[in-house]
Amino acid sequence: MHFRHVYHCAVLLLGLPFLSGCKWFDKDRQQPKNASADTYYSIKGFLDDQWRFLEGQPIVLLRVATFNGKSDSSFVSLDSMVWKEIRKQFDASDIGEPRFLGQYDFSMYNEEALNQIVLSYTAKNRDLLTQKINIGMDNVNHQVRTVYIETHKGNRTYEKTQKLTYIPRQVISIQAFEKSIISRPENLRVAYYFKY
View 1 (cartoon, rainbow, N blue to C red):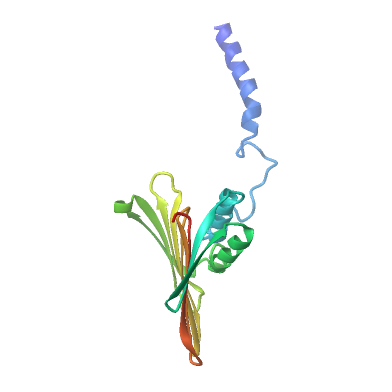
View 2: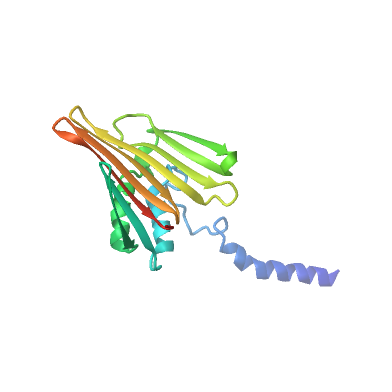
């Protein structure tokens, strides 16, 4: 009986320092004030994570640009300059800041045939740049499989729409359609292929 009591005391004394490192035991560590505030999925955060994975790897992409039906292709190294060029279109569509809360209808559904969960954001207002975001995530490990974004900007004399697609380690596609009353419509699609 005495041995069992000593054993329990030793476990308690040795385990206490480990427990004090946990958040719920650490009274000095305060939660940020906005820790409980929800935000929508951050495209910028996703792309930051992607770049941490891709940076420094010897990746050569096949870049195919099509402008009004005429195509051109080239090979480009995925360096920071190319990444910035790709990112600027996606970053502009990010809705991951608190100011966007309440401006989108959110739904989540299961695509059983593809074994994925889809997070869907649809703008409530036509004046918002980002009109739609669909994020496909693996059912099991919740890794992002696809990101699809639609944007719209315009007024009575000008309109620009975009369709952005990001499929990790496969393809990045940026498609833009512009029209105005003073010029002909323009259709540009730039795709970067990881596998070719």
